Image (cartoon, rainbow, N blue to C red; front, top):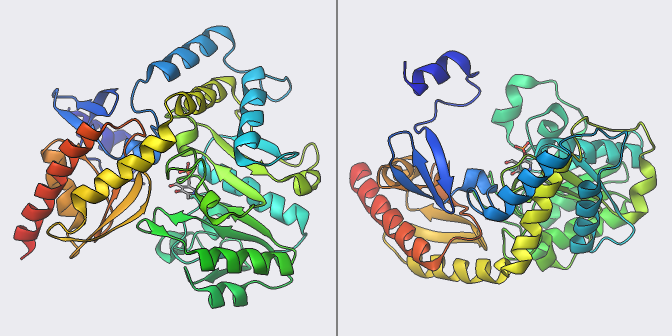
Length: 391
Ligand SMILES: Cc1ncc(COP(=O)(O)O)c(C=O)c1O
């Protein structure tokens, strides 16, 4: 039996059967079970910030697992405290606190509970197309009806505003609103950047109605967009910031950053999770952040974006390249993104058809200019080949 058959016999079909079995990775390259090499321009969906098997992560995790692998929240472990302090520093949240968990959905769940605890019985506002996770609370604020429909009833009293429509968000927010869910770039909706006008209208209405802004940085955070966090370019100070994905560089970890004014909203016993703040995940998070600083990867990400835009913009079949840093959406001239994804894979490049007409690029932050050139050559050819098929 091959691994596709084994997968279909054992893994719950909440995902379609994948078309590739990966067995090894190093840097931006991954290798499948037949020894075929690919450039990984998806990085486990914006997770492997330092690529595969980065020595800094291998060293930090190995050392930590040899020393102390898990203690529960009944004891302090130093890596989690060090990581929390580092995150508060990067987020510029003096006096704030971090709640650690294991995934992006959990970080959003924690934000939901915190918003309710802060403003009892409050209602939530989110944005059409937004994505915050698959658990029931996170799904309730996810603005994608097809993902919600089979699981209704969800948590009630969530209103959805239209993305980048300042009037719509303004009228969705009222004195009963507790939390407002925003993303600086909607990754899952097809890499759609928020406008400055939309973000400032949301913050203004939040302030007028004593509501909290939950700025979900699960996909955009930890240098992915060329800043530590995607919200920085708007010059705003969100109350709650869910993080996950790139923070652990491939080791599962989630976090909710809580602004100083709110830390009293949750009391001991108010929320928790066994693995939250696990020292192995925290050691990985510290290694990721230190390496980004040491290699000045933020600057590199900005230059990499320029290079990718140069190589794709105005090319055949490419209508637009949108997004920031190394979270980019290549908007195609038609609904043939799946074909492009397949053709690219056959030719050694992993990308993702995030929408029928959009290819998402989210390579490791360490991707070199040569790898970008090589990857974009494959992508351009894949676009041309796919256009021929559909025309
Ligand atoms: C913005 C955002 N929030 C939350 C999530 C959910 O994270 P996870 O899959 O780790 O639960 C995702 C995942 O894609 C995301 O992109």
